[in-house]
Amino acid sequence: MSRWRIGADGEETSAAFDAAAGGAERSEAVFVAGHGAGSHMDHRSMLQLSEVLRERGFDVVRFNFLYRDKGARAPDRMPRLQACFSAVTERVRREVPGKKLIIGGRSMGGRVASMLAAEGFACDALLLLAYPLHPAGQPERLRDAHLPKIKVPVLCVNGTRDALCQKDLMTKAIDGLGWQMQWLEGKDHSFPMTAEIGELAAGWLADL
Image: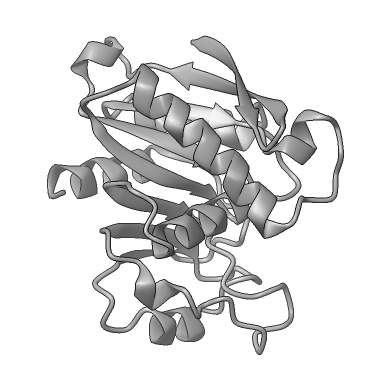
């Protein structure tokens, strides 16, 4: 693992590069993984995510959004979240060239990446985990307007009991968009990062 400090939106944040099992030279893709709103790059769920993907041949870059790196709990506004994600990804382009670049992450991290992709940010694919389609208990407040603008392949994994992603609403929101949507039966928003996630991602990557 390598630790980086990255300039973003006039400040600095932390990131970690986790090479694929067997060494970075054996990987074909690097995944830039954003954390959820109440999480951080070294949270157990992010470490588990990195581990299961590294075992399947991905390099993984974990990072803190700016607010989290300075110890704040309330997330920054979306433009600042996007600026941070973008700065980290540009660093990855320089440090890890010549590989498929996949962006995404858990919950809010995945949403930020999806909005970047919808605006034309260059990447090869999106990997979204526990995508927050709407606030908890407010299914009428859909966050789906940008989804049809995404033009890269998407693998999205959600639990069927996710309070932030009602299954029927998500199915309707992405109908015809060509996403690979995987539902984990009985799992909620905080589903664990198991080997199954790694296997799903590896199979999807092989088809990119």
